[in-house]
Image 1 (cartoon, rainbow, N blue to C red):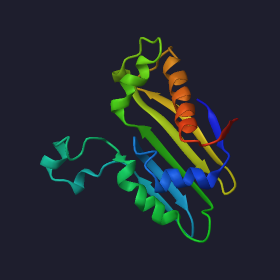
Image 2: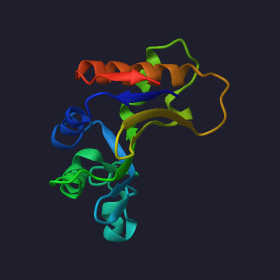
Image 3: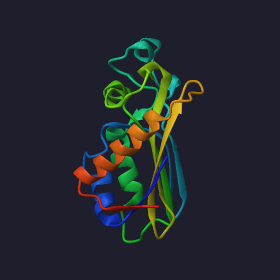
Image 4: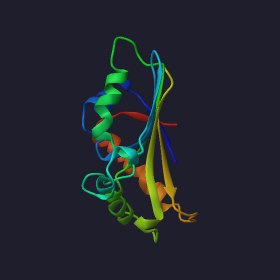
Length: 167
């Protein structure tokens, strides 16, 4: 787990909310504080779907909503003349990228042992921080996946020319 302080918040937010840079993620949850505090549970709502749709992996491939599908809703809540007082987003890397990420390291951890590679994005009114995390289905002694994910996030930000300081 690492914490990365984003240097140019406006540039980051442009890529996060107006671009497709984060479309390889799912939204677990969001909290956006402006004139109200809006909370979004990213879990797909079973009662919204028919039983056939719920089981159809083409229609509903993930437990959580794809960021690209809900990004515009979050953008509408944040945009305006005034900066939000705070926000927090919890994102999961799309599961289909887990295997290729693990292949980059010398680890015996398999994709089915990894629940999620996570990015927690926090804004407190003055600074924006990204915190990485890895969730497993069971306790593992091998911390290689954590290091692989931390490096992948650093590379992801660098590739998109998002400057950060590691805190």
